[in-house]
Length: 307
Length: 151
Image 1: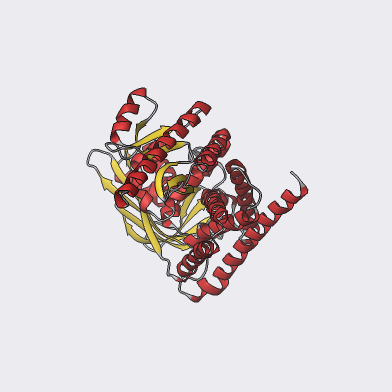
Image 2 (image 1 turned 60 degrees about the vertical axis):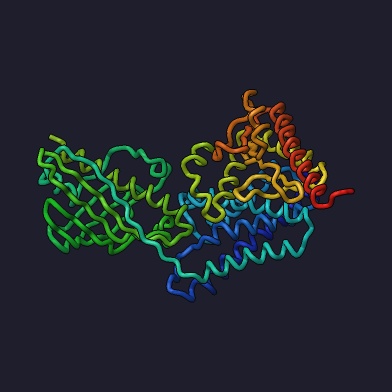
């Protein structure tokens, strides 16, 4: 690679990332803070429109370089890697978060670069300004819009034990020693390992302890013995992997006596998401919540079925 | 993977930008798994753009679309899948060779799909695109004759 090309690449990476840092900074401090969702909300535009604009900006620097499709993708991938490093430095994001966000970033930057290449080949400045202007309008409109998303995930298993035997393990359970099966837990995402409770009554404080030592503080809000245990989350750990992105609001275990010595155990969790688009992030949130449920519920099943 | 997404998750293409993002992931997948395919697609693009009145644009669901005077000749997804519209009679002639197949979504139409996996496939894709180009160019000539008949 000659010196001129290297300089062009550095400009492409530097200016596009500077634009992203600036746009997200403006969004967080001047736009989002003016409405109700102040705090850790990350909108659709920050994950798609801004990376696409980054791709377009970098394509502008490469407009005279006659890059092949392969080179364009390689350089855009490098640009995405730089963005991810910057996100970990400036936004304090954890490794798991960055793994989750990276498919969106890489795809958007690559698509942006190809849009940019098509734009700058045509040399139609009116069209180019219209495209970029339209994207900026989408960014501002999206940033000014209210974002609110709640969902619930439910999972069911059958335990070969009567509800009376299952109940005590639902309220609190000993440490999980079983190895993690879910790939995100295997690569370091904290997984639930233990639950403790100060007493078997309504209003009792409960703790859900995770593998990295973080604790969710909970309070029992429904205590219907052998049938329904519902708990509100009163305090969440300040973990960089979840901070500001998701709030687990409430958890619930429902027990149904099947009348044949078995119990149907239902685990429900309610959460609020602060990252958009939900078609992407809620898929992850559901998968993670489901695997937290299953890890706990399979442990409850094992404890309850033990002779 | 592509077949699974188009057959079972095709309804998601109405989500804004999702088709483009999916194509971005295909590009990245191809970059790491079969980068030569990206070079073949560049070569196809360069050749098609030598034909008169052709342009290339980004397809509405991602990928590279070739147009003749603004009308689509065909498009190539970033996994090397060429989709194009032919006349039903030409499609019927080509199908027995076993190289082309019904379009991955529009089965009983003139749309066809062809997967580029080798250099010879690249040449065949170009031949198919040329047929599409000729078809549109002929239509254009006929239309001009009809609109401006020479006495």
